[in-house]
Length: 341
Ligand code: PHE
Image (tube, rainbow, N blue to C red):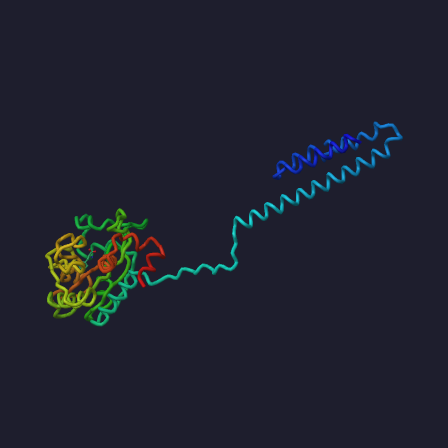
């Protein structure tokens, strides 16, 4: 009988020290399993003289029940404690307001494009969209870049698995598409769209970017018309009073050709980091449509003339907003958009 109360005291003390599931299970095996100490005590009934059995049996059963009840109580205690710990750790505060969903905004390139459309729209230009997937013929050959022409090297190309089918490297092939569709009408269109070049992506160049091409074809179009149109555009896009500088340049599909600079919109021409201390920012390429290109579009260069220009909306957005890395535009980070309210 003494041993029984000893066993109970010991079992209860060890149970109080079992602080996790593993300790609790070890305790259960030690005391309550089929070969545990409590079962052993119960089993001892059979070895007792018959007159002692009844009293011992009662006592051992009472002890077993007490210990079992203590085990169940301790198990519940541990479950409650771990639940309470979880609740304080996760700290759900149901009174907190919910998180606001992030709202997108118009992308700076979309805004720049719409601005360009508005300005040229007011001058009577229509939007003509040509295809992104072009042929070597239209993207290059009809624009005076024969196969193997060194000027192709400036436009590293994404080719497709289909021979002579590629992703357009500029919007200029749209000139051919528009001329072939409009002939013999006069033309005044802008051709916006994505272009693709197989280039290392850096802060200054992406492999996918936009261009907006302009094309005018008619009977008496001169370089003066080109200059007037671009001066009017620059004044609306970059602010009144802009100075423009036409620098001689070369493109296979225009003759003569020029690159156009505006006086730096940051420093006004006195020299700064953005204009690399030149006072000028290059904004586009342009020229009079080459006679071969007019002919390839179906227009007789003896009768018709035309001008064309091409600009990069990313570059324009970069200049206007002082953005220092072109990769921001296509990294899909909504934080960029929220900066352009
Ligand atoms: N297509 C030329 C380029 O991608 C730009 C350009 C367009 C130049 C039209 C002249 C006329 O660099």
